[in-house]
Amino acid sequence: MASTSLLLGTALAGFLAFLAGIFEDSESNAGSASNPNSQVQLAPQIGNRHRYFNKAISGEPPANALWATTAATIAYLLTAHFGGDAFAVLIASIIGAASSTLLLCAYGALSHISRIASMKNFEQALYWDSLLTPLPLDAAYGFLTALILTLLAFAAHGLLGNPFSVPLIALFFGITIGAIGSSTGDIYYGAERLYQCYIFGSGIPISVQGDIDVKGEYGYRNSVDTPYFTIRFGGLVTGLAFGMLIFLDAWSRLFTFAGVWTSVIVVSALVLVILIFIYLLEVYTRKRYGRYAED
Amino acid sequence: MIDPVTATIMIIAGGVLVGVCVHFIPASATGAMAAATGIATGPSMLSAGAGLAGIYAAAYSIDSGLAPVIISGAVGSALMLLITILCGNIVLAFGIGAPPVSGQTASGKSTFGGTKDIITGFEQEGYRSPGTDGHGMPFQTVVSGTIGALMGGAGGALVFYAVYSMTLPAISTENAVALAGIVAAGVFLINSVLPAYVLVGKTEGMFDMKIRSMHRTFISCLVTSSIVACVIYAISWLAVSGVVA
Image (tube, rainbow over all chains, first blue to last red; front, side, top):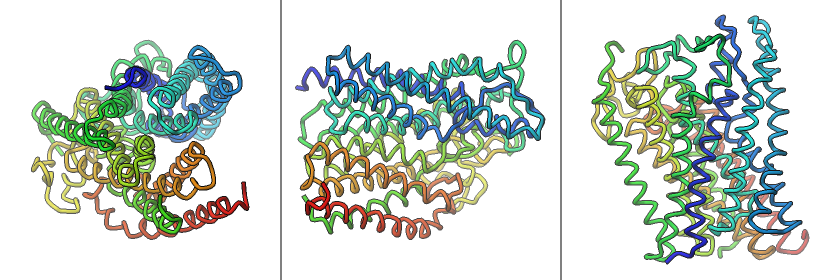
């Protein structure tokens, strides 16, 4: 029978990871931070002057690793120095996440300005509202991502018993959540939200890339509208992916029927189950959507 | 525990495995616009994410010996990759409204020829959106990705355990685990980025012709990992001998 701390840690880690996934995807979409930033960068080159916030500082995994590790390192140092209980960990994590958010704001503002400035030859203007309006929203999502990843790292170290130190776990989670976020939720931003003017039910042809929607439901579209749209599907699926990973990984260690091999057996079984789900989903989509009229 | 020379060879082998694994993990940055087959991000960063998830899982078994660490890392990495693929295909199916399809196979340029999925037998031609090079992860690429993730996770865990074994005589267990984790993550990042020069941002795994360029990745990762392994060996030897604290 698993101990109470393990059970609590598994449930808490799964829940925190689900939230972290949602916030991470929203942060990346608000700042056009991942692969679809190429479309926002391409838009002025084909005559689409836009008002998107475009602050891709680096690939999404290293960027999130930086925010999470900065926050976790500060939080860990504070708790190591002052000590304290779960409440102290929460306060220290908030201070750590706030510090990493300041970093995000500085990098985000400079990154946006320099990216837009590089498009001067294509008559892309630097609109201050497209920087100053989405920046606080992006920073808020960044703060929540860093805070929750820090709390998750404390939960993985303290409750689940991972032997890595808290900042190192945060680094690992940052890179993993960035890889997951840019592989799942960003498709919804890159292939649907940026191209809503194109008919639903198709990938975006290479020939039209850069022809993004610059006008929204009311006036020019900006990056504050983006997470409002993507959080309802892309964000939730990203949260589901990271939440499932952390929860199932922790859940596999609750059993003890085969000694040290127990979690390996449970995870292998889960891998087979997921493979079956992937197969069934492919069968469903092929039947549901069928062939395209021309290829 | 294992002796330092064997551990050095394990670091080299782990680094090469990590580099080779990237060739098997189908990924493409333009996949984010559903314009190319593969997981919608760069192959290197995706492999790094999967590999670090594997090292995180392997760390729980660090006291159980070499075999549980390696296999925990491999399956932990495969779990991350398959969850990502499942959720990526969910977004494609319900957010974009398109089925997963292999672009290379649909155009008859797959490694194994033909226009059908080699495992399920599903026809790929005609299911690709006009003007794109496929989208999502059809089943054959899922299997290729799983093989890659198993290799990458095992490689990362191999480096992790090797560094842990080399440094444990000199420092405390807690510090040895942390150091091994940092070094394993570093070796993983170095070797997962090297194949980017061969893959140039896109691959469909073992069904992509680029798999034939794997020997270049193998040699570059072998050279890089050998240098890294020698440096780690030298530092560990100095630490164990008491020359550096």
